[in-house]
Image (cartoon, rainbow, N blue to C red; front, side, top):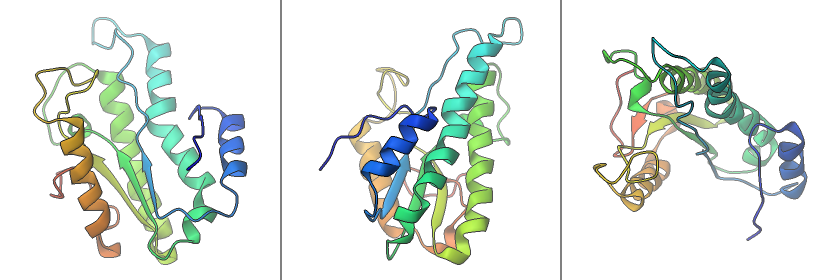
Amino acid sequence: MTLIELEVTSDASISNMVKLLDNQSIDILINNAGVISPADQSLEKMDTNGWMHAFAVNSIAPFMISTALLPNLMQSKRPRILTISSMMAALHRDSMGMYAYRSSKAAVNKVMQTMSVELKDKGIIVCPIHPGWVQTQMGGVDAEITALESAQGIYRLAQSVKLEQSGTFFTWEGDVHVW
């Protein structure tokens, strides 16, 4: 296994990754890079440059990486693109604050849903996933589940998801999440 350093918002870094993975089949791509930043993202005080950075990492980078690796995914018998999103992006929830994070994750949900429609004829499954409230630096120590529990659930989902479900917003437990 080769370790590849990747700056997800850098065209040059993504090109380097593509060269290093040339002609290697990819069965499952998990877009997991994400930021909650900026610190100021409220109605009263918004760091708009930080908001743009959140969009670059959380919304645009998963598109860039997924499209760059399409030739590798096409070599798989059962290719899947899973992108870590958040329930905080669900439009049905009444919530306040965290504009940059919420909107950038809502945007990636739509990007993945659109990509799922365009790639379905190629047999590529594409789904955003809410990983749960996870005990990470972002989720904090009071979060409900461990990183291992989340990863195991996402792995089970990756193994069981069907092409007919492509474009569905799932939870880490494999349940359909309301948009």
